[in-house]
Image (cartoon, rainbow, N blue to C red; front, side):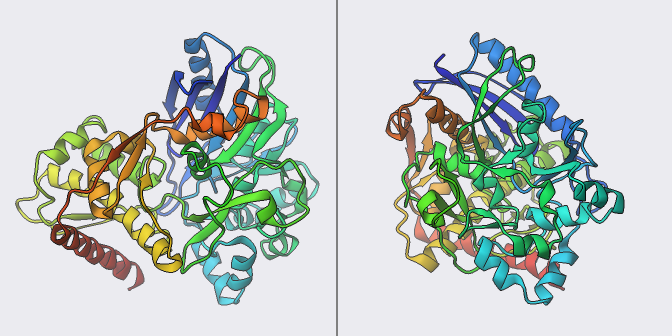
Length: 491
């Protein structure tokens, strides 16, 4: 067998891709699942919907490829939490999604206590409702749930843990460092869940998963689930899997840094050794943010904006039509769109921010709104890159992109224009799934090493063409719109 099944469990849909040893996609399938918004600022999923949509996609992809995979690689939306019964695998309540803001007040209270410097030193993260710990703390306030957790009857995990538990029939309760490092409970220096952080959020150790390396066989799927037992050999959160899928496979290509209000996290752990020694010995770290600001389909705000324009306003029928609408006009007509539906992330970290459209006139059309939404992806990506470069002196000769938004040629050209550097798009834009496939394939020998895996990649480049004066005008308009969104949130 020379193919890998990559399972990509995202925020709005589940995807399965069969990746051949030569890098070709043999087959793929995708299914969306319902989003639940019980109250303003709250976002939930039914954990069973996540599994059902993922297994349905996996079975369809395997059938279409006509062969059984050598292994399974998993990538997932990060920070979303699930609590379930260890014996029955029944979820204890809904999954609380990473965009959920119900714990904003709790995070503010902890900041007021002065504990954020310690938290950041250990985790590389800020106290924000975006991360998992406060969500779990809120679920454990139910006294019945708390007692069951203390007796070891319940299991906690991010979505990767939930997937593995269901694939293995509850035999494996694990996570990897890329997901653990986004919980606010994981210490970067030690590579383990931290007792001081567990005490801060009152989390019982009995419910925590074991931390395993990102590439390595950790268990097998149940025989009847996907046709036969298949080794589960790779796990990585979506952002880190995409980084690996883009070919960032050498230690040092992404470094563990702290600057301004950017977050840090683990990119992957390939070394099979346990947690002894320094984190840098075992892990490659990343500087960056979760996708709450924009920049490809892996960044949720693009999906939210496009889905809202499509489903909420009915401006087009398919996401692919957005490119034609953007091309139909020379500019946005002064309209700026800040799609902060669930707040602004790094470098602003303002959970109270909400979406804002500025510059509307009687001449504004659906094309202006769509173009402004697409431009916001590129503009907020530049905003983050400026924060990174400004604080570290990083030389950025090019930007590699991935995800569904990367298929939009107009957007990729605009991204290159506002950055002023070339943008490279891989032949397979779904690099998140490809990264998960690579981690699993390396573990079972489908690829002998990272060099062989990297040799399967090809890229198309988009070069800057925009005049400096036009770029400056567009960037100033964007800055004004973001400032307006922040002012609205803080007054």
